[in-house]
Image (tube, rainbow, N blue to C red):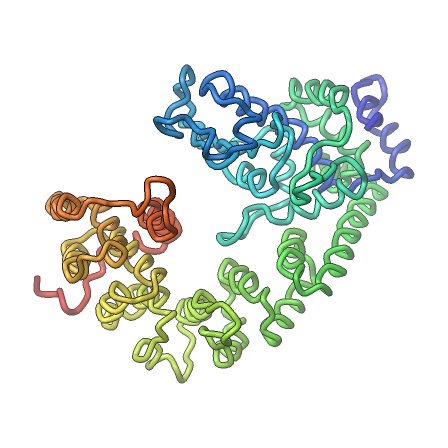
Length: 496
């Protein structure tokens, strides 16, 4: 990374830098290079979390790493960070997540040994997804990874950069946990050089100079005005994208990498993307979830015939050795209904819904077939499948109207079993109905939560205790779709 030092010598013009470095390809792709810059800064952010855990919460890092929950304070493992009113903390297992109450930025760290140096890829991706005003390193990273995903890990394609950095020996894996990694070199000199760029980040010229020496030719083209972009620079930018495309196409040959390959091809607007989308829909590979998600974002009705063809062949319950996939069933129907595509099965879709699809069905029916929604809500709330109860309860909590309160109360009153009533109880407490709140509180007084053992919690006990949080997550996922439907009046309630 000694090339970066050259950028700070302002006596060398941009044209001279281009002439010098264009013939000398950089060892890393721009995706990997900007990720490395970001990780150097993220190491400092994780050290900030370690300081909170050690100095403000009084927990020894090595004790937390070794004993997990056993090292948590006896009173509670979450709250406002002492002395830092803008930050909340939540201890979990061997780690701690801190969230800025003003910006929403979330920094999550798992501790190994007595250090915060180890990066967990999912935590890092989640950090990126919470940024609203990123620094220059993450800003460029987000430009290279434009998001379309509402499902799965955010910024999933960053994993390709992490793999490249490991191959180039900039990162090293943990001996016992290969999925986590840390910087494999002394980054202090490079960190000092990065500080200079942060002080002049409002000026595009230093960034152009940096982009030149690290081979981010697409960024050079973006930052320079069209009349100043040299033909050779434009060609180099095209070559960077072409190399990225070739790598992604080679990944597509591996079935377990098709999802990330698709997302990567979408990020660079590859001309091959539609060909692969068609292939996946025709073959029905696991990447079909990503394909449907991508097409829902695109909102292009020309895909309706192919999606309908896939829908006709798809079985949401799958085979005995496969996990049911009601979300795929729901994605197909959402796309077809949205575009008012006429297909033979449309009239009977909600007449005989598979038991695994009731949760998805209540959302679709409320959006597109309100006359059939009520019976589906009632079936889903009373389903033996927790996911159905969760989705239906979350939708009714978001609707937050007298009829939705009544449906939740009716289902809730039919059982005294904590597991069968948990979703309805949590949903009622999320509404604005104070009378419903009191009904739930009275029930909880009559049925206090009791653990089978003082030493450990069963899976069922843990699920019931955690359910309010899961319901809030489900509500967050559905909020954008459901809030515009709050004033929809189901036919059964038109005269009320």
